[in-house]
Amino acid sequence: MVLSREQLSHIKTVFKHSEFFPNYPQDDTTQRAWIEIDETALHHNVQQIKNLLSPRTSLMAVVKADGYGHGAVKVANTVMAAGGDALAVATLQEGIELRLAEIEAPILILGVINTLEEVEALVHWQLEPTLCSLPQVQLFGETLQELGTMLPVHLKLDTGMSRLGMRWEEAISFVQYVQQFPELEIKSVYSHLATADEQDDRFMRLQQQRFESAIAQLDSINFTAPCLHLANSAATLRDSSFHYDLVRVGLALYGLSPSPHLSAIADLKPVLQVKARITQIKDIPAGAGVSYGHQFVAKEPRRIAVVGIGYADGVPRNLSNELQVLLKGKRVPQIGAITMDQLMLDITHCEHAQLGDIVTLIGQAEQEAITADDWAQQLGTISWEILCGFKHRLPRLSVKNAE
Ligand SMILES: *Cc1c(COP(=O)(O)O)cnc(C)c1O
Image: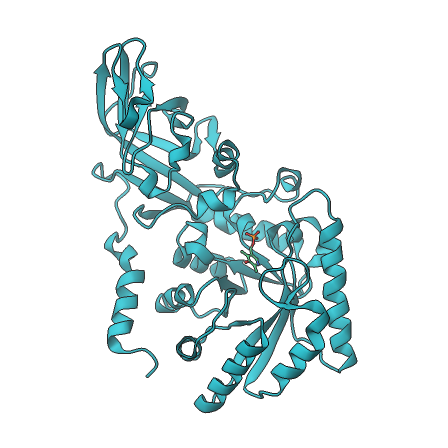
């Protein structure tokens, strides 16, 4: 027994808490805020990416950070049904969450596993680790020897990201050390690109050269990796010479382009929409301040709407007074500080707004659209950070929009 009954039930409570919202009815007006996941769009994005790949290249869907805020289980199931080949997550717990949901696909853990208990859990849950240092190889080798079991492992080379991995010049000693432990079954050798989304492709190509030189070195000791991989979304989109046997795609699956200069390569559709309801409408007189600190003071009488979503749901507080939302197909300004659970809109010019109306924070409403990229630009960050900022408190609803 690897995990005790208590540990297991704890993990189940933590990770299955999304079951507290089983098939939440979409027309339930008590629901203050939610995320809609468009399974049709996700399916479409998988097809778009697969169209770029040769038949020899597998698609590994990166569903770390709760599927970039979309809900890892839902994304994993949809992607696998749409023709994905494998999954990747960052942590052991994220991998266990998928196994508890009875997902059987191969799952690569991209992050570091460094303790004996975690190695045991990996074996139990059939999750595949990344190996990136010699002490770690030793821990794995010895633990598996004691358990008397094999484990597929993935060797990570650092070709210039200076994050996880053995330096590419050390590929031979790395592989030879791993080969001393027959329980370690090398399933792939991989590396990660630092600048694939940038217009200037010189460093990305240098990393590729280093990767290939490491592979050539391994050839010289008669080691052939069964699978090689290097590409994230950006490299997958921009150059098929980076595809090798497998691509690890995150952002593009969710329908966003890693960079504007790559957006024409595939027709990607945003998968997630963030919506909330108007929970109160009121008129305020000239001179009234709105929200904490009165950052907004009405110069003339205003009609405001309170909306049931805030920074604890993942709407960044730094967007206060800058955010716009879509209401009845029109852009409406948000006013005053965004609070933990609520925010206010100025709906003075939106006469038809009513209690219970749905407000779109990210998504499409009639002719207007607001994307995670728009928020990222306003905040000086990247869309990845916006997406994985959406919290568990928002129920994820599946919708199937027509193509
Ligand atoms: C997150 C991650 C990816 C996916 O990156 P995207 O840019 O979202 O496609 C791929 N590989 C590794 C090692 C990662 O950590």
